[in-house]
Length: 467
Image (tube, rainbow, N blue to C red; front, side, top):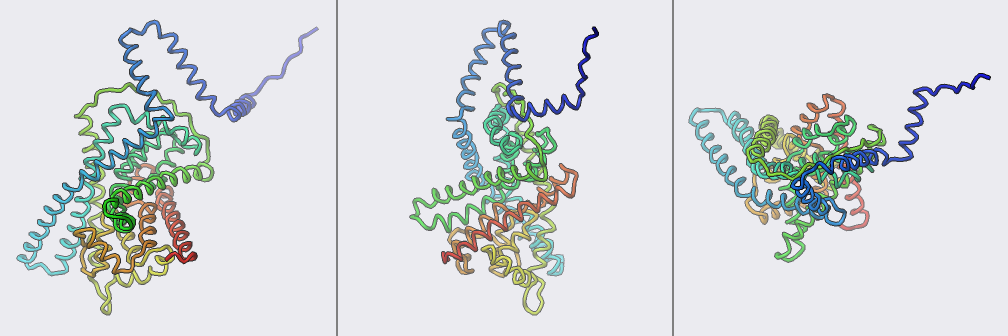
């Protein structure tokens, strides 16, 4: 008798069965990788020298703390808080020194233009518009980036950042995103444009796009001065002076946490709609802790990141300063163009808890978040040029005199946190994705979310008669 011939299994059937097994065992890939490494350790164990074992044991002991569920997250947030504190506190003095130097040079430029007999409109556009806008951007952006990026790069060089990715990988997996996205988010705290560029470290094109589209939800250093000033004036002002800084810090930290939560939520939504797919397994071999190389840290942080981002910001901010000056100084029937634009925007702005001038300041501040508050003060004071506030008390008086309430402050901070990326970040998104579609969505998604959130907050407060 001839043996029965079994039907051949096709490749398609094998792939279908493999997919069923993978879906029923979502951690199968991680288990396979874990078994491979355990077997490798068993095989290589006898050949490892005692010194190497001792070193590895030291790394393991440290990792037991830094990557544990009990201590890993508090240490991670504590380190991030320390970096923020050093950046904010350390940048105040050099920012003021750079601003004083550049504005002193602005005064000299005005003298030279006057001696040259230049018309007032040309002086206004080039000096009070373009140069003054550049001075603001450089003074506000350069010191924080020059502090934040070296500190961030130091943690990277020490080998700590891979531990951060390891800690948060599971949370991003639940959003069907990549754990490395937390590294791009951390870079975004310094500058969202740099955060977008750093998305290159994510191998999966789908997960890389998710990281690019959501990086704007972590506030960059250009938004922190506005958030801190408003939080100190309105929220810190509700308590005694001794507690003002603590309350303001708590409010800003809460906003940062909200931004991170929105990042998770939008990442989950994108991975279930426009960018459907399963999270790729992140095979991350934690590198050994190592002595930082100061030369490499200096070059990567200052040359590759700080100067690179600052150059893009300057290119975008120069024309913005000139356009803003023209809008503020061209009058039609005794009202400036800025006045007309603010009046037109007033109904939309009121619906989301702002006023026309605030919304217009964010629109004109598209090239750089650093100039939003100077533009707003220019609008309120009708000076025709971007202004700075001397003290928080002076700023408080200006805002209160222009009908600011606690609702205006809350909605302005929420809009500042969630609104569209600056043009530098958008340009970086276009260069990284090579697509106008994804660049437009990088702008559209946070814009829609900012309007929706502020609309809900404003209308709810008014409906409950809280203002």
